[in-house]
Length: 490
Image (tube, rainbow, N blue to C red; front, side, top):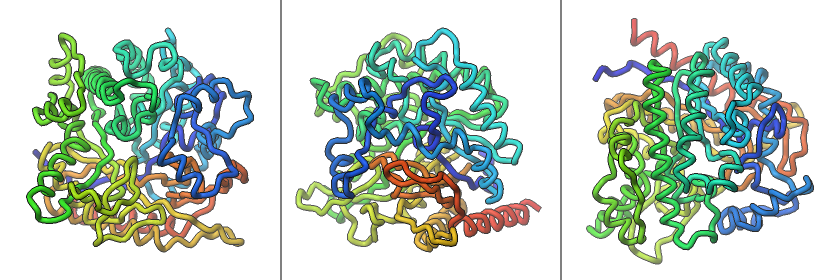
């Protein structure tokens, strides 16, 4: 396999967290539109909600009936819908080579099962992606980044129903046919393993409403696997020069000690949390190690004739992952824990953590890149990586964030080492390149961007954009990266 000489440096956002434009342009109600935040909550109450009651049937029912008095941060995002030209101009000023964002299914098919697509929604995304292309920025588009039309849940049961496969196929077909000229790479699903760790986000399943939640999760995942495989097949036909990939939330796993039991635990944690999902999507079949796990959970995934053949034929052209932290594995019950993306994780005593308890491990990024490439031998995209932190907007409009610069530098340096190791790295898109609503706590004060957006947790603010110190640092790093690439190619 020919190795590329370089990789693309860019940024990433998601429609539900940045777009806004709620109810505008014919957009329907999305599953992420139902998540609320009480602006009067203090940080402890916000974290309690995030960790222990992220979504409930009570919340679901109330949101459907709400007259507009409750605050739903994801309905407003940071109004990228109205600011996209300004935001893409800032990305171009930075020299971004690629922009990853998502398409809201409910903006294309407001109910999900509509006979015809919403032309205003198609035009909006075409305008956004065309604007990127005009600035020389490639586009990586995610079809489902947690949000699907609510109607698909209330009428059909969402991902639990095989009927959703046909609706997804229609959706993917329209995206390829109408947006294929302005998109370069496709991801059918964001962090597909999120279904296991965050059921509402990943599979639109409400905790407490299933007699066997694990059964519902893995049946929903099977339907997502089939949708992904069908998206690959359709992509080969409709957009043959635009690769279709798969993405997980990567939990880089180390054994806590050299005890054999800890090493075995690390192997199983990796299999059940990470490898299973990509093994199905990149290798094309259910791995045998899952038989033991399904037996433990009393899970029996219903498959129909043709499913296995579809998975075999629909393997992806690249693999992608989000990376924020690493974890340790042990069966010692008293091991200290800390927070992480989607999950609580066991603490590594050798690592420092962010304000939100996420362990910072740049070397773990290189570890994962090597592991994934060795396992699949496919090009790799680091689709998310970044630091959530409190940022202070100064009176002169400046934002000094040396902590973010240090974080980005440490991780980007590991990318270069992984490429030297022989990893075929396609792209890196830092998460939340322009501030957005954080998906977990639903707040603005957990900021990831190199561009500051003037909005607070209650939705107040001018939405004006300000360049942080990290903006200039990332601009210079991309310029240096491009110059190095030209030198190597000459």
